[in-house]
Length: 408
Ligand SMILES: N[C@@H](CCC(=O)N[C@@H](CS)C(=O)NCC(=O)O)C(=O)O
Image (cartoon, rainbow, N blue to C red; front, side, top):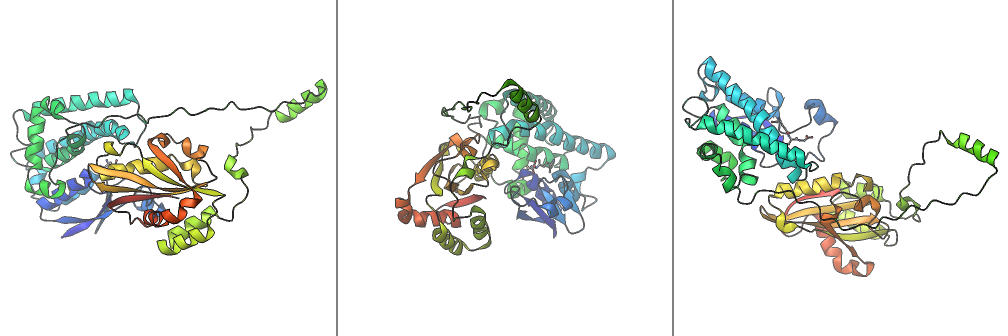
């Protein structure tokens, strides 16, 4: 029986946590993919005010916080061994749940998320997180020296919470030499995740060989032009003083984008974005080519420069999401479709962008990770030859398509 639908991104161990707890009680959750970038609307926040995933759209209750969802599943059987037998065991389970969230997950996130491009990389804060992880793992290792499971002699909810919180680090951060420092934790992780219900929901876990490392965006030097200030005509002193008085309180004029100064175009970006969003791609692309203005806009093939460093599909997809988030200033002037093709540990990011004007503008090249992408202009003489490929990128019908994002 399903307890409701969990919304999240694919392969989230926090979802697996809830599903494993449900499975131990012969129950299940349905799962629906949720795109944090595009689907967090007002209605979502009304229902789930924190706005994070996973969330449960339950049959009898809506829940956020994955441990609440997992615990809800465990509680469906009041005598479930997952919950512990005595008050002492129940309190110990709560202790480990809090430990998994506060000492493990929080610090793992601060270590991992800058490496995955979700947050800016600040070395001191990542180093501090690593130290905190080591402290927590050191404590866990000591406890597990004499124990197979955290509470009692079999799996409880404590093991579900702790083991699932270790999944990403064991896959992405803890290489052989790191693991060897926490042998008891590693043995425990392998034992617990080797259990039937864990395997069902976590799959076969490949332990990390090469840990994720921070790769700074490979910036090429940008030419910084000195701003030319127009020479002022000399005025009589009194007039100049009066002008100064008048001008002093005025805020500096808002810098206008150079792109606003281009000759008007018959191609209206907003109209195109609506067209693309509300129609099948063949209808939208017919409109696109009928209205395209090669003097007012340019088309660009975009390829990620470091495809050989990509790992999991959802992480590649998140890289695109991060890039788009940093292109906020360009929203009025650009449209893009970027896709991930391939499989986990062998994938690539590429796409097409339509951009106002004939150059990559400041609004795009100023984005922190712009330099991680190659932008190659498609000349009007190449349009005919590229039409089919552009269509496939817009329709997400590219060979090996795994995921895609639209910048609009
Ligand atoms: N303690 C929460 C953490 C949830 C969480 O951090 N979710 C992330 C994805 S793994 C999220 O939705 N982040 C979006 C945001 O911070 O806006 C839980 O266990 O459910």
